[in-house]
Amino acid sequence: MKKTYTIHLSGTVFHIEDDAYEVLQKYLISLKNYFGDNDEGKEILADIEFRIAEIFTAKLSDDKKVITLEWVNETVETMGTPENFTEEDDNEQPFGEKTKRKRRLYRDPEEQILGGVCGGLAAYFNMDPVVIRLIGVVLFFITSGLALFVYLILWIVVPKAVNAAQRLEMRGEEVTVKNIEKFIKEEVDSVKESYKKFRKSGFFSKNKA
Amino acid sequence: MKIENTKAQMRKGVLEYCILLILDGKPLYATNILQGLKEAKMIVVEGTLYPLLTRLKNDGLLTYKWEESTQGPPRKYYELTASGRKFLKELEGSWDELVDAVGMVKQNRA
Image 1: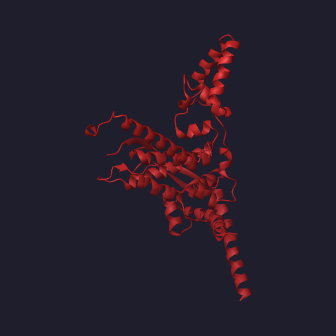
Image 2: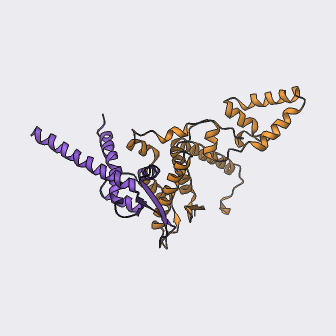
Image 3: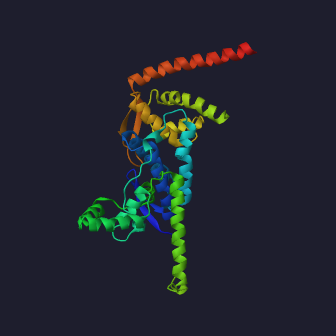
């Protein structure tokens, strides 16, 4: 048994297994970063998504209704990764130019006490969140409470870093396939770790599984 | 100097010419163009075609229109513009020159 997601690519709805979804998502993000966020890049990406949808549609049949990891890997191989494009295209001005990495301010859900604002600021300035929090507390007293309003405004205005790409952006790391892969691996490991702890805690009985 | 790089560069130069050739006379959508190019082993990964098509379109050599398809969503059919046809004529000329030039060099050496 596997969990599936419902996605739509180029207007066609597909069911996709969750591991396949992860790979497809990071592949599309890497393409988006490679081709850039302007009209030209968007058009290229839309064309590629169209082709991917077409490949998936051709693979679907009555007994195969869900996109598997294998299909996604095959498709990525057919379409090629940004690394393949640069190999074939090394004289051209790189599309990657537009993807110059920049740090963005997010709220960090992993370093969260209230809204994750301090954690996000810490990632942005590459500092320890504890230091930022201390500065925050000091500011609170100096400004006689005004800092709290600033905090609340930031909480409202700054988006939360929900997915892997955003969390990499938050840390100012380049959003490449490799980085996202590394990141997701780390995530999975930490989930496994907590799962193990969870089992050890005796909460989980095999009979229920 | 890697042989793969040189080969890729040679192929890349000819690739635009081939796309225009394939589109000469009949509008096609990307997957048809891909078939032609893959059969001829002109491209390795399909993803390289799309930025090229977009670039050729933005340069005014190609244009496209959406056409309904019997299976799946509407498709983007590319065709040559007037300046695309002119461009292709010139490329054909310079391709012939190149072939002649290489032929001549080979012959003189022998």
